Image (cartoon, rainbow, N blue to C red; front, side, top):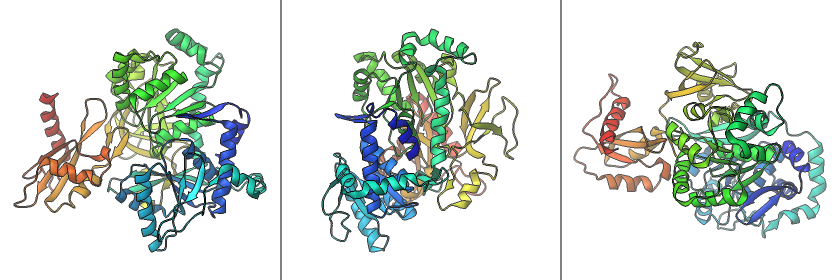
Length: 562
């Protein structure tokens, strides 16, 4: 990964790479910062195979840390900066990181990190806490019982001037880091409610970028005999927008968190393809549209719910979005009516991306050459280099048009779940096929249609929500005997979580009390949207709640409300 960035950056040292607020960073400056930070981390004994937790919002600091960790052969563990205490504790206990990096501006998160740090050091884990400030420096956090990483802040430049440059050059000349080495540990909550670390190598995170590069050759390179027909179709549809983009660096706008595979891959694609990356640390619809207008953004990536809000604002406030060529929607299902609304409001193509943390991002995606209907009603064709098949319960391949489980294989598929070989074997076979748990069919033209999910997962605001995690927390309340959480379609795409609760004998509880209890420990996207109290559940012969019947009940209740 480090080698790839250097090859791209050396060819465009003076070009802008990152724009975040008032900060503007060129590729040359990024290389210098990455080198200095890598040397500083190495001085803290961070080396090959060590885990480095990034509790940072999207921004230049995250980018610098990611590539510095890559240079060292270490593993980055990106976490949601808004993660609750219990989530941090679970992940830190599992990952056993050497260092936790946070930002001074994130006082609440830093406080949580410090609390976990002290608990960890008390048990002998030796986690060190580092604050990475907006100016690009590192400083130790002094607090009773915690190791002080550094007595004073050290800037990238100062590290670079203190004799580490020679060591860094020696390290770069020696091929210590291989493509198969692990680079990232991306946590996604498991069906048991416990977060699972998805292991990705340098190769598996670069592979999606290579696939996207090939996909972009259709409209960013001069057409050849193979692509001229598709190019003509796209040109007829997008005219000046496409002509302005051909052969030039693109400008991405990232609005999703970089602790998710969607956000991380947007960052990697923009930088490793030599483009400009405009960053919003936290999504705000007006700010996003203002950035599109001011920076002449060509590729806007957001979750469907964010596009719904922005499309509504565009209808009333009219921002100049004529630079947009592509609106990329991912991380949650995008309803066809929303895709058509995006096309109408912004006048550009819609790329619906479909993938998973386990696949390093996209399994399939729609293309700028696809018809408006295919862009809205399918998740496109498999990405270049991605093998896809639809299989039955016995993993036998099904014929075209049949509905079954979607399986895929490529260099981007994860190495496995960290410390969980049994969980890995459930989804990844010996031939490298990953079984997604999604029900799909493929039409004769090779376009994939998602029809449902085998696994009990709720997708809300681009985040995976696993009912078992919410249920496990709800049942810690002394009034709640049993909990069943189901996903119900939301009005703007994605799903809502409905909680059906069975109380202890004689207990009384209001829905507001349940919500307040959840708010104390669960992330906002995991909060139940509706709470219902039941005398008992419809149950199977083995006594398990029949969630499909609860979901049907919720849909009946939801229909008149809509």
